[in-house]
Image (tube, rainbow, N blue to C red):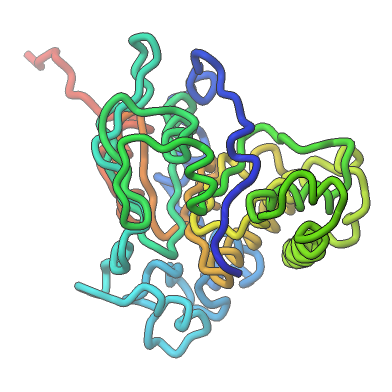
Length: 366
């Protein structure tokens, strides 16, 4: 697939004054457990390879017992002869074998000192980080940390008061949703926003509206360029539907599908735009374990097989640590961690933010 834009990107209307990402929960239990006792990954001793496919990332199912590895850990995977080494070679190794070459490829997206506030309420403060082309970057943090607000800045739904964004070699102080869509940035949102009275196929095809070049009159009469475009857009939509394995429901009304399938249709609509950068806001929220497993596999395949760069928000830390090459941690609108999953998990600031720190007693012993 080539690179395109998300036709519906400009349809989202943000609230006048956002209330963050939801009720503020400072210490999510899944992350606490992860920091204290990291979960095993695919191929770890004592576990079947398929049991931890989600946590195991894109590395081989046949890894040696106890080895933690993902596509980002190219220094450990490349040249190993294990399945998955070819995928890891997308990120050439540099430095020691313990370092992950997250930024070894050119940055597709760079945020420089981004700040955003609403009537004096600071949502994001001085955030800077880069996302390498071809990687999966996860934004994590407690509810209300500013993750969704940051995605809204990236695709132009919100306009930052300060800072700049560089995307595909171009630096912009501001980016509008339609510009982001035309430049190949696709987006899904926390809440499903599909056309419930339309079929799966029709919903997916709306993601290709910006690909059309025919006039509205040609489309209404289905003459001239419109007829050829209809066939082309349907063909692309069918490919995406097959890719995400929702073809049995292609003619089913979206409103009759399960929640998990609706989330997959929303992903398909974004993917139909052939994006270069895919922004996913909690794509696995509300899913059961099986649905999370399937969605993780699809995101991995989108990145690996289509070469799409992905930035996602997710609260399931076992999924994040296994799926991501790069993790950025936010807390109260500030960045407190930025690196590989292993580096973030060992970051004292991240541990302190989620677990707290021990203070010595002010009372002295006599």
